[in-house]
Image 1 (cartoon, rainbow, N blue to C red):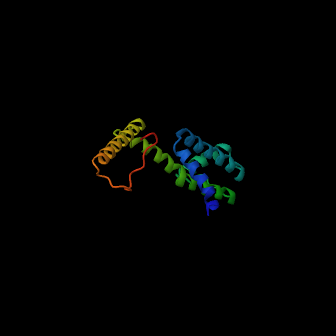
Image 2 (cartoon, rainbow, N blue to C red):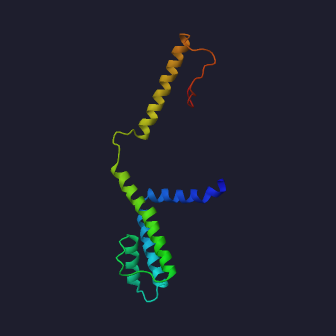
Image 3 (cartoon, one colour):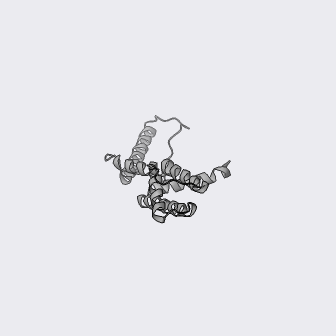
Length: 152
């Protein structure tokens, strides 16, 4: 089962990489337009390079004016793939990226603050355990939380 999921993990990692890198996301979008435009130029005889690029932009944006449309089966399959990739992957990634930039929690603790809080909690736990042991509150064999490295 793991071997069957391995390719999907690679795709997932690639999508995460794209989503977290605006430059790469925009570059991928532009490359997709250019590659599909060039392929359209070769698949559809008589289409100029400019018309092919126009078709790719209009199709990728899902506007689809209808002024230029593929006649060959290769062009139609490429159009279906281009639309699917744009609608299911690229547009959601762009939207998610911008939404994540708009939703920023200014009150969130930074990494250093989180580490300081964890260290302080470990100190408080150790002091409470020492106090409980001194007063005989704990029972032998009771489950104590794991100690952090360097504590004790």
